[in-house]
Amino acid sequence: MPSRITPPTLPEATYHYLGLFGVRARQSDFERAEKLFHQALGRVRRPEDIRAALALDTRRLLPVQLKSPLYERLMSLVGRSPRLLREYAQEMYDFGPEFKPYADDLWDEANRLESA
Image (cartoon, rainbow, N blue to C red):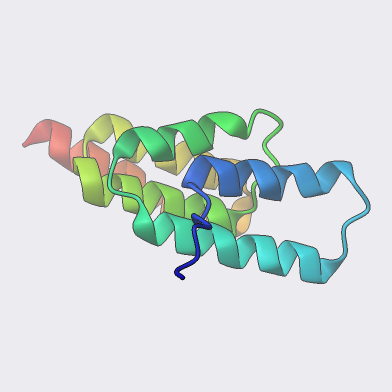
């Protein structure tokens, strides 16, 4: 008999990952949650699911290794608009100076799209 267990959706996986910050979670718990997150991200077909996952991060706890793939997947689904590129660039600026060159590239791409 096949299993009826359904894999978590992206918002559910994001909620689970963020919930680990409220309890005494081990590093292995975060690694397992990150793996579930990436599996759920690979199954996403609707941009609304990605927006819902981003909206859950109200305290800005998602690390760059989770937030960046969210934006990359969102851009692959809806296209690289200037507004979305600037939103993504701002997130990268907020992660610190080591991400500034990438954020600058995103911002420049948004400017090129607007001027074209």
